[in-house]
Image 1: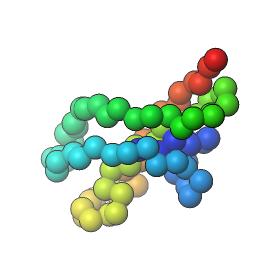
Image 2: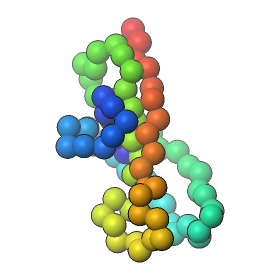
Image 3: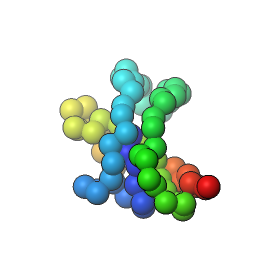
Image 4: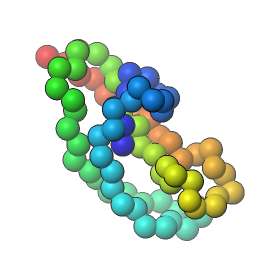
Length: 77
């Protein structure tokens, strides 16, 4: 998972950690949670947590373009 100022994964995003997810059959899903720590000193504003599946592209898939999900979060005082 990554901490980002936008909803696109890029080199400026901050790595937060990961969670192992076993292989999932086509059309299926898997729920879970992971605790992460937001970096210290982050200003108030809207940010994104970006989750990436198969980040090193080791699993052959019919659709390789749906492995990233971004969710907005608000940092307040």
